[in-house]
Length: 271
Image 1 (spheres, rainbow, N blue to C red):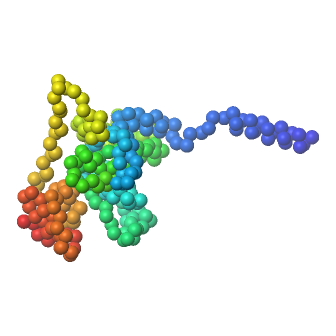
Image 2 (cartoon, rainbow, N blue to C red):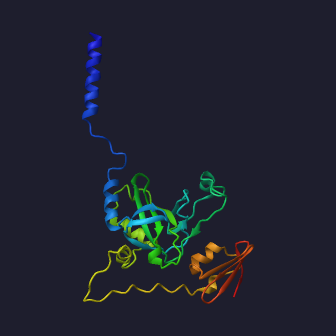
Image 3 (cartoon, rainbow, N blue to C red):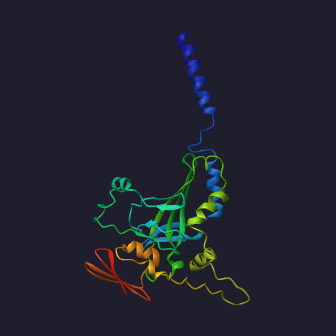
């Protein structure tokens, strides 16, 4: 008798479990917010080919307006997350670097660099963690948008940390996108330019061809370059140099109107 009762209870319990809807692995509002956010910021599809990373479907193009976003080469498997919080971009802390074996990975070389201001990037992934009030964007340089001579396709990750309860409390995609735009606003006409690079942007307009806007002039604030600054700090202020001359311990960054000398990775002279 007891065996029959036990079997009956077990059968009822299993029936209840089978009939119950599966619990969401994330906050109930996460998927909706993530989907709505992807409607405002179109994610680009990226694949690998013989030359490295390649964009197979171009999405939204954003522009870097805050310095300090560290990026990594396309072949680097380690991409440490940057964090945007309280109005500033924060690089990975020393503990995270140790955990990820930052200095000693590969051949021991750190090939990362800071993304210059006004650099244009694709968004390759958007992930919402409503429980922890975080929104993460994976980025990749839009080489065709930046008019570079040599493709680099550096990639980065930035975590937008919102105040406690902001995302989990029901913030909508528009509010989240507004904060993201403080760091990465959309490029005006960037989507059309990216699509044109893939052969889909030739549209008739009275028989004429629409010319792409010229690249922005490099920043003129040369007075901010001081002795002791690192190569990454200089690139973050002035952008990529026109030419780099590597003389071993000494390195020259040559711009249109100036030459910067580095010794042991730090500015020693500006002329």
